[in-house]
Amino acid sequence: MDPHDVRRLAQEFSTEANIAVEVDFPEGAEGVWPTPEAQLLADRSFYDFLGPECSDKPCQHVNCQRGAISQSVLCSVHHFESVRGRTCPFNITPKI
Ligand SMILES: [Zn+2]
Image (cartoon, rainbow, N blue to C red; front, side, top):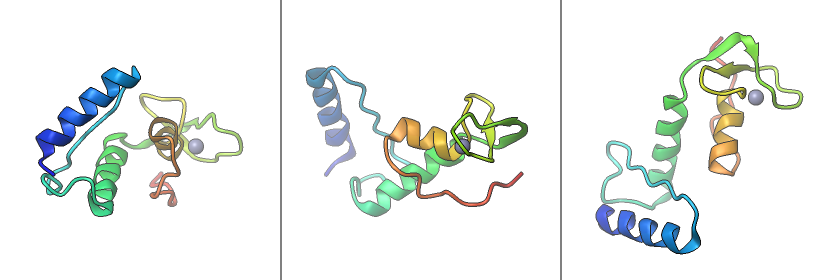
């Protein structure tokens, strides 16, 4: 499906459902959306965009030992799950 069609459909759906639908195309994923590989690329792009976690600002999620990212009270994994509404596939040991 053409990426422009996907964006148009997302726009129509979000207008009808009165919700926000985010459609992003990471480099290399244009024209192949929405395959699982493209989904993973988009997820990784978003996850990387969140930036580093701060070791002196703990994540506010229950029992989380990670640091929060600069624009949130959550770590990158829990911020990802909060925004995307599903399990973060990049829940690995933090770089701090
Ligand atoms: Zn966390």
